[in-house]
Length: 301
Image (cartoon, rainbow, N blue to C red):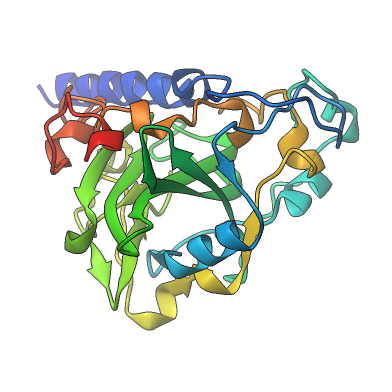
């Protein structure tokens, strides 16, 4: 019987991470509203037609920049796209290529950039979506040889009412799924709080201290247990706007197995449903934690 349980758990883990490895495909490839092709690497990068730039974007990104809460035993932290490029085989950095990591040394500095893009809601000029991204060199295995892959891209989206200067909603992304919380329910000292998964780096609204072999591979099982301020990072201190003019974001190939970079994914968040996943613990399960009806659109909140 014990052997049967182990095999069953292994099947669940394999299913979950076959989903996670396809996150780039699930997120889509191109944003709504295209502008003329830009330079940089010279790949087919186009900016969103809803993009807000300049001092307005900078002010919004800084005003609503989230507070990251890392596990007290976090094995790594986000890093810069330049650091990732320096750890990548130059031969793989070509338009339409697939990046190949050559240096897997885990970044250990808590001084890292948070990348962002600000877009306006085409259906409501008072609403904007601030998309915050973090880049990792690698995601380690969560159990035995399951779940690990080179490169990892994670993000969280905060919807803001410009007229009131208040955050409306926060959409947390993890394991190819997501869920949306009311912003006022996830604040810490007037900042949106994001608990970062210890291994898979997904974004969550809460901590998790449950741990046993294999559980960390489940949708909610990634350990996230910060020990106070020393494990917190205030992202206002290092914000960088994403743009096709930055070579790493102009790259249109795959960041290893996770898929396309941020500017080559569907970013029309006003058309996203508030959550994705109703499969339970060992599948996509985002909707179980969402504050809104699963069929509602984020842009209508």
